[in-house]
Image 1 (cartoon, one colour):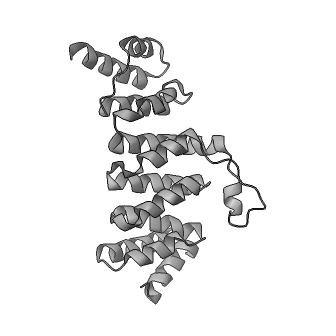
Image 2 (spheres, rainbow, N blue to C red):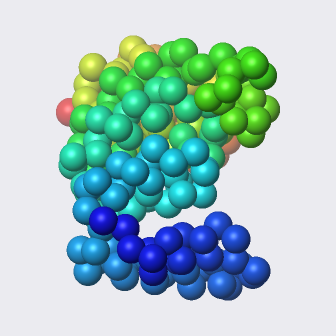
Length: 217
């Protein structure tokens, strides 16, 4: 059960007078995590908290200590949140688990990011209503692809291939890396075209590496 010193640190994390004070509060909370002072029920309570600072802290903590019993709640928050900051924190937590448990939720979010929430929805915070689907997708694409490189499997190839043509070269590079790390085959002609025409040198280099691997396999 959360004690007064836990709440004091959480309040400092949320309302600290300086970045240094907030950082120190986070460090002290992380020490308590390492010492096993947080139970699953504590984290569930914080994950359900409407304050985004408390919720973001709990998401990070669950990932750091790999609290398996909270995995389903993390997925639920991910599918229902409209806040890119929370979504990125969740993707970092998914990455920490090094598990394929979150693949379906991530793919679903990439395919159909939640539409802009209505202002009349009482359960939706004003901060969430500020983000539309396009902005959400732009914010979460790279961390989502990083997670999929660790937790994904060959079945995600057709789901993410569209991002090989994304305007952002970082997205294109991470998409290629996902294909490479998960050993998902790409057509050699497509790789050759990327190698020859992509405007970004790192993307061209990644395509060249993959093309060479394919040709020497």
